[in-house]
Length: 548
Image (tube, rainbow, N blue to C red; front, side, top):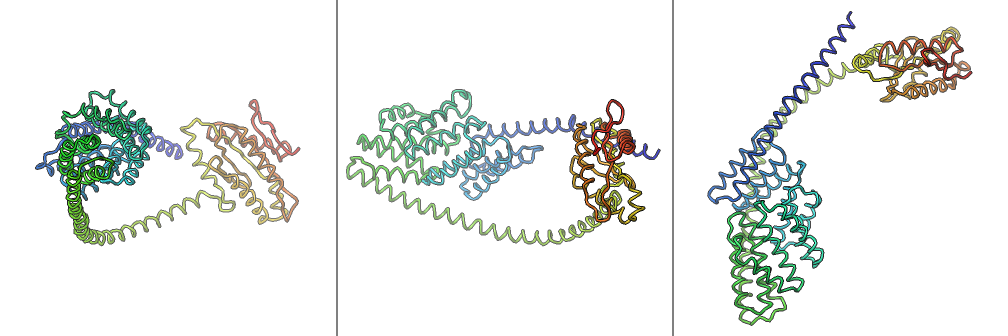
């Protein structure tokens, strides 16, 4: 009756766990998915509406985005996207430290998400930044990081995929690999028609055309380059307030870059000076001073037939721009050093105070953990000892009983091997019980060598042992039984010639009835010559292997 009550309680617990699990899958998970979807839609809607930011409202935008991060069940992708937006606002504010700090936060979450598109976009933006800073090696480094994050052809977002291919084209132009660059910009452009309704489509067409213009100029196709520029001379992107810094970097400056070179190539010095003035106005507005320095240097050092007056004017501009770059960089370096220094001192003071408090709490936690582990180890030791045969160190009969419990709810087939040492009483009577213990220990060692996740061994009582083979194929159990019989027969003893073992095998559910069947087969082996393995064939025990 007590055993039935225990089984009943186990079944009740299993049913309760099953009910809770079902409730989670059918109620909680759909609810979480619904809320997560609503959160995602809110974030996307906010970002789409706020494509440009008013200068006097930067702090308000940061506050609003921070609140969005607290929405329930926000995904890593959405959180990373929001940090990327915060980074852009810090960039507009001119806060370089916070800009890169927020980009780092964004990359942490985006690299954990399945969709790597925005992570790729950030790496490409950093590569683009280094291009405008005239640092080609760093630009290549971060463009390669983008590819390592996600191969170009696997990028899910078409806008980012087009951008990534365009960046590859630009870098290849810098290396003089014009044919490969043409392949990359063609792939980038091929993505655009299927996204004609996207907000970014028209700007990407214009930006890609600037890459084509640069490619044409570097290839000596000056008329083609001029034609592309003519098609965009009235473009709205010269004055678009949406992502103005990006359109300036990717469209306006490349336009004037090629325009200046074409004017110099055609000895049209009036246009050249005009374009250089336009270039200066655009670059100074968003801090692209090194790009201006680059074009001034290229014009001066290029193979152009410019008048001495024009060369002098361009050189004066280059000197003036250089002084501005030095001054701006000095301010930037001061900001990069002073702000982290002050915040670092404050942060460390607060951190040390928090650490002291944490250390005290940790000591108390460690003491609690130590006490709990000690109690747990004592319990484990007691339970382990109570389930193990002290002589042979295999499981005892109580452990075997526990191992049969899963069979109450499972129909999976296993095999039992019952074994009994032949003439064991004679060993005890002839050589003494201490020698009998040696024989039992030797069999225990032999069984433990065969013990793995598919086999479990137990001492059933006296000289009887049981092995459960968790395999539905009876041939596996029969092979193991024969190996045990043979290996035990071949054992060497210093006090007797040898001893054998009889075995019975059965296959069925993990249950007492299957164990009883193995026991019957064991005694069939004992009654028919011993030193044999018996198995049920056509409903009757039959010896399947023996030494005879």
